[in-house]
Length: 270
Image (cartoon, rainbow, N blue to C red; front, side, top):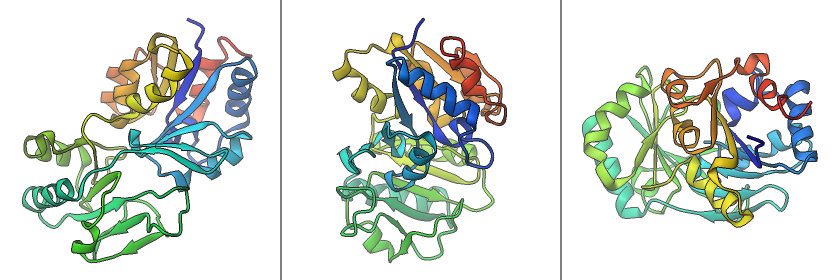
């Protein structure tokens, strides 16, 4: 197949271990884009964490953020669409988390009209929440305040736990309240509005362009990438990928530390 659209995860996939787009990967992506291929970022990151990636790429592709809940246009710094968990759903999910994962901290991602909308505190966490990674732009509030407004995702954090174990414990209780996923095995679960994934986000962008799933190639490394790896005409897992992501993919390339994404794109664009 000659792909018409490339959609890639960011961390552990497009970026190397130093969170850089290597020269080889940047050149492969640019060659594809110069040939007329659409390029989309599909990430668990919020919109405010997209600009550093755009700067390294040298152009501003559309971005599927928050694992499919948000479509963001970095060229105009505009939130194109956002789907949220309601206040009622957040309250029910918080109760489930407290019962099933005692001691877990909670946080939510919210979005406004732009990546850094000053009118909307975007990462809001409960007291004592321990971050799974460096996140200096959080706002600590009471649990009541945290649950007082719709959010594009709820984060359930238990330091020292394994994300896979947490997902297995939560799944029977969450049901249709939301969809569980995770992008790190470091004790962090993300809950999205039901029916959303990176695949639905990419499809939202591909549809108006007349591009079918069969003409799309996707890249990823973690369980939150599985829906788009399975949905696309060609789903490629990185050599460093989670075993479940590898099992879901059509093929496995080399790790992100060895330009695995570039090695695949170079089949068509050198």
